[in-house]
Image (cartoon, rainbow over all chains, first blue to last red; front, side):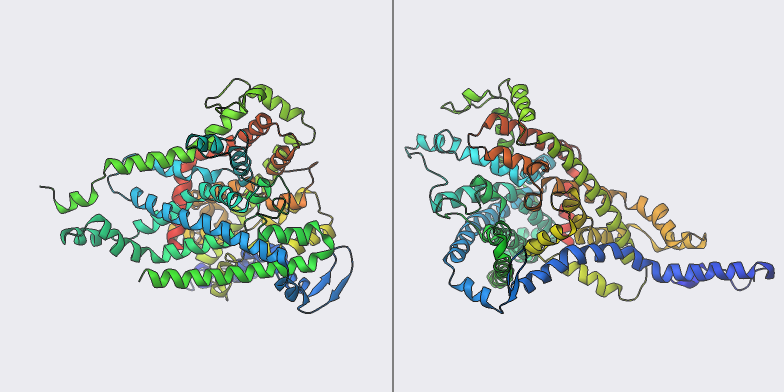
Length: 323
Length: 280
């Protein structure tokens, strides 16, 4: 049933007394204005604040990226020079490789594990469901800063728990922040720890939306649980899986806090930039070095383009492979 | 002979083994935080590493409070203020706009809603550099305005409240309010807002956690003299000679409030997250 201005009007069968009519008319006018225009007032806060502090800065990033922009004063228009500079900037490529390395090491195992855990949690007669869901989600409650601090200690060279555990299998202590591969692994483990549970819950929600009678029918036909997982769960889960992959892509391409704190606040990420990510490089160029803000803005737009490309690529990949 | 459906829904012990293992891995770092935070400095570097809590938590946290470089109490206070204000605002503006989109008719509402949904996909980090400059121009550098005002509204808040309002509130209820002569705002305040309470609660919890835990922007725009809690923690851990007992005691104190909130409201939070996932 639709709602319109007429609903609130008094019935025409009962005309108002004449002495009251002007007040009544004014009331009716106010009422009509209220119904017609007040919705705009209710949505205005979002558009005003988001416009000023979300959309506008984003547009301005694009504008700045076309300038030799010094945060203190000078702005000279230089067209696409910042972008051509990017192409031959070895630190940019280094950050790109690091970001993709850490992204692959965190996203792939994480999503596989989340899929596995969600499948376990999806059992109908599972006991202590709520307990398991809460326990697995709990890492997401802690701040990234806290995670990075705790894992930083676990990955300490001399007294860290991981090197101590490795010593049992005869592996020498690893200098976790001293090499590319080891720092990538350490940082990925923080991301994995914090986000696996979240993705598990999202995938679980997707699984629970799949009609149960599909499984019953398959079981009657003699399909094993494993086969049911491949032939029913995975294909039906595709939209949720694409959603999760795109969220992980956006997060992975913007990775900042974990590597920054792992480097004890050093924005270049390790002595040889072993784990400087794109977001760290953007921060270094745009905020730490105020005179290269225009170049930093170009890095920001490059990250945005990369996010779109990688999301699109993943989207096509997932759509094809789960056919 | 087991029937097909029994075979289908059977839960094997291996399932529990895997889930318990996952749960332990998820919870262990919290425990580790407590272990190191409550050990005295000279036995945290022991080999093998300590595995049980000690009794030095008070001492360690005392050192946090004495540490002038970290401004832990200021950080705690700032985080409480910022998170509360942001949460209150996101819930109010979100429910107001969500109500408008779900239950009121106005020109362009579909296009405007679509615009909001599209903005959810924009990574906000992309505006970081100009936003930093804008804050300088506004004179908001190193003030709580900088970490509060830009976050007073969220697209997610509007969207979530709209979804809930369109299911939970009947048109008849709103019409009844109109017949009684209530203004639209009155209807929102006395009828809609109370009906939205469950969703508002979940949105509030999620917003509070996110604000409490945010790092990058506060780190960029606040100085160590006036930090939020997370920024304060990061400066504690940067110290040249890292006093891990102190850092972990502080980290635990900064984390425990959220863990308690989560233990109390976890069911609702998880419900909200899973529900949001299916619809989006």
